[in-house]
Length: 322
Image: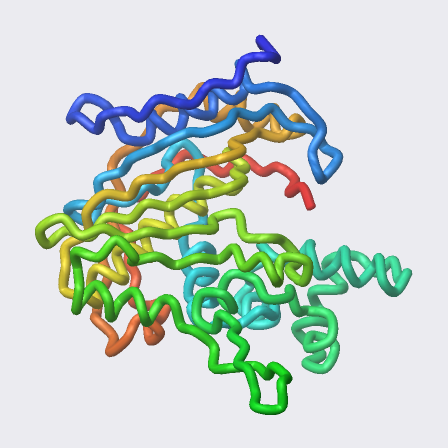
């Protein structure tokens, strides 16, 4: 590894003889081999590059669903549907068996109470005790809160401010895509500077911008911080899923997903995952079918999504850095 070098990954074409997943593997290899090694917030240590771009054509039901290891797309889909509810509490996820947010409230509980309860016991209590979940299962105003209920303030005649009506950015984008498709303001933003300190984790996939080309809906996602091994497979699926859902709602065809990463990194304790995955070759071309069109984007159910032709290689487990 040449620790001082940190250049951006080059986008790959998606020609018939070049599997689109190869660009993900190339990015993983590049970060691992030439990323600069440094300490990070978690204390684990990473190898990191500044800036990367991946592009995926979503035509024909295609999805950036990795096949070189199993990605639990239903888990990522349940998380996306949870975002769209505006919820910030892990209990609805816990009750569906989704574990991806559990470590953050558990760490806060242990830190603030001194109770050394294990993660599994903490999660079981979240599921069984609604009052406990209300107190300790909240993540602060994370993604969903900003997406569908961005806080506003209004000035009162007595000179004080009071909370105004929240802004539903997702609904606004869908409306603007229908009424003004050529706009350059089709944006969903999660980076609310005023509320970052109250969030369990500031948004990583922070800015979604939509672009209409003919009757195709494109999406550009800017992700400020990207864990390539564990996070990015979920982020790619989720961004493509959101694009497909919005495209259906506005009667457009899905176009291209353009993913842009800022701090693009791999954790040093994920070496076994990285080295194993880089020996594997992509397996087929999975597609997504959305089986119905709900009245609004907020009415989708997990049963509305079916993946076809997904025959991935086995999963590779690795610890999450909190």
